[in-house]
Structure formats: structure tokens, C-alpha cells
Image 1 (cartoon, rainbow, N blue to C red):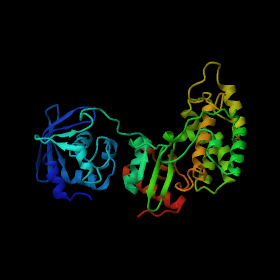
Image 2 (cartoon, rainbow, N blue to C red):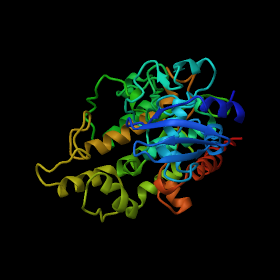
Image 3 (cartoon, helix red, strand yellow):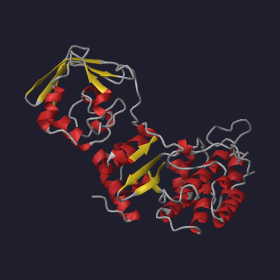
Image 4 (tube, helix red, strand yellow):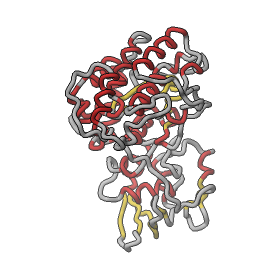
Length: 380
């Protein structure tokens, strides 16, 4: 249960000092009516609106300095983050504390300073300010962060959440999926020599036990996923299940302009692919022909199961396909619903601006729209 405004103010009034994520000190913290004042190391004295901070607290399950730009006026994002964490309302990774039992993770000392029990307050921590982090922060704000896991939110997926083996034959798929995987791997040029490890920790995130969306894998797909190898895998998926994202993803994978302007630069490939996009084999042959000997970069490097130039591209398409059909594997059938995929480029298509230029409120509205349009889910 969230605090009311007066209790929120009283809690922050106890603070004397707070520390930024890089160890900078905000000292001599004092409250006066609807403002809280602090002193920077430069000795400048600055105010923060308690109403603005309270709006953040009521609205955001997860915060970092990038998210706070949408809520805090002036260049006060770092002190705002430090004060909210020092108050104990958010943990050291920026997740809002859910209940009184969790507040015990933060102790208030006699000076009113917040002291973390497990880690030093001044220790640096990452705040997931990349695009994937902002996407999962927005999703957590829409659904409530207690239903969302993500490696960019410091809550990675594990083997306790699902089974995802690197070898599809170890997944317990029905025969039609094994047949489809066999055909796909042949098209991708695989030698079928996969490792034995699991891929669970590489999943971008999950929705867990949500009352509407249930439990499912969530993937935030940046430009490097929309390749000719992925086009091959999407064709195979079409034979298995009518995934909501298929038509949009197939269209993106088929656009030469998108491939040359966005996808290839992500793979550090300067040349343009002038032929029609048909399949991975033709693309891989071209890629090998334009790659100078000894100049193979890590983005197109050989990988286990795909021992050739462009191997990482093929491997990514294969791993994406494993995630797509993971809910049909015998260990996952009783707990997983079909995957939820969101393409980063959707923001540019709809909002006509780059992903990192969209505000948090815009992202939340757009993700909600996408869920309703493509997945027929209405999130209240």
C-alpha cells in the first residue's frame, strides 16, 4: 500500500544526507512546507518539489535518472534519485519498495541517514538507462513491477522461471516443431553442434503471474534482430502458430532500406545489400564475399552450431525461435503463455521520433496501444 502525501513528507523530513549513484553527497537536507532542500558538494543550495517527488513515487515502480527527466524540472535528476532511495521508498537498484516488510531493508540511523544493510550506500550501481531498460521500466509501470522481471531491471530470468535449452532436441517439443527446427537449421547452415548449457539468463525479461497477461517471455527487439536469418525463422513459425507479431516482423525483415540503413550498421557492416531479400543462404554468401580475410568482427563471427561468417546472425535467429516456441515445450506448457515481442522501431514508426527521445509517458501509452492492437489485451 502506497503512503499518503503527508506520511511521504514526514518520511523525507527525517533525511539529513543522501548519496548519488556515483557517491556524490547531498547534505544538510531539510524540509519546509512542500519543498525539500539540499546542498551539493559545490555548496549550492537547491530546492526540490515534494509534490513532484510524490508524483514519481505514486506513478513509477522503477526509476533511474533518465525516467526522472519526465517528472522533475531542472537538472535535479541525480539528487531526486538519491533522495528517493535514501528514504527507503526505492531500493538501491531503483525498484519501489512494495510493503512494510520490505522497508526493513533500509535502516534509518540516528542522524536520519539511510544505510543499506547489505551494501555500502556509496557503491556505484547501474541504473539501466539503455533502451531495453527504459522499455522494461515502462512495462513495469503499466503492469506493476511486481509482475515484471528483466535483466535490465536487475531481476534476471532464471531456470526457475522456465526451461530454455540451447539444443532444441532437449526441449521436449512435439514432432512438428522438431521437424520445423530441423528445416530451419538446415536453411541457416547449422552443423547442429550446440552446447549443453541453458539460455534462460539471456532472455530479456518475463511477465510473471499477471492477472491479464499471465506468465510469458518478453523480448525487446532492436534492429539487429531483423535479418534474413530471422525471415527464414518467421516463415517456419507461420506453419506452427499464428503469432501476433509475425506479419509486422516479416515485413520489417523484408525491407531492403531497413536492412541497409539500420540492421547492417548494427552488425558493423558498411556495404549495402543490393539483392532482393530472399533467404539467409544468399545473404550469408554475400556477407562472406564482402568480408576481407581476417577482418571478421564479433557481430558476424562464427558461433557454436554456426561455424561461418554471419554465424552470430544465424545463432540469434535460432535463439529467437527457441524463445518463440518455448511455451510449447513439455517443461513449460503448464506455466507459459505465448511470447510477447515488442520491436524498438515501432516507436519511430508511430511517434516519428527516436526511441530515446520518447518520454516515459509516451512509451507507456505506446506499449499499451501495442498490447491492445497486436495482442488484443486491454490493460486498465
